[in-house]
Figure 1 (cartoon, rainbow, N blue to C red):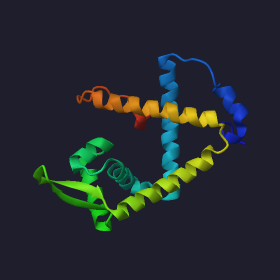
Figure 2 (figure 1 turned 120 degrees about the vertical axis):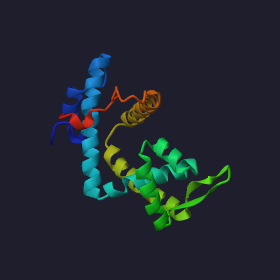
Figure 3 (figure 1 turned 30 degrees about the horizontal axis):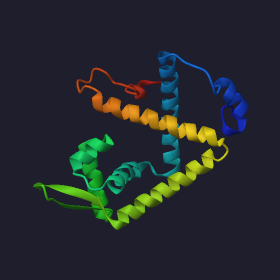
Length: 185
């Protein structure tokens, strides 16, 4: 078995023991390496599963289903996507009957987007497929490890989101993962 796989837990535990400590710099270096690796593995999975082309659709549908209707500009900001990308995806989703546009009652010049019943069903199917895949992946993990993974990943996402909103727009600081494309790890 390959080192670090679920089936070779002893080798993985030797490389990354369950307890210990790390300086912020060491943690940043290790996290950077693992996030780049995770991103590449996720991209490979999406390409293999032929779902990469629908990733924007899934993100936008999830936001509309979970949080309700949005203006396109607010949807772009909430999902960290470019407005032109959101506009293109929204047009395609309207054509498929997944999203509808209606006038914004507070500002008739604008429009609110909301998921249709078909959009909600499509989102639920995406989520069911995703959850089933992760359940198979995490089944061999101890329950405590699964819990800690969710807890720590939630904390990381919360901090990244806060960092993203607090970051100055000057472009001086690429922030966490800002040079990901340049990294060869």
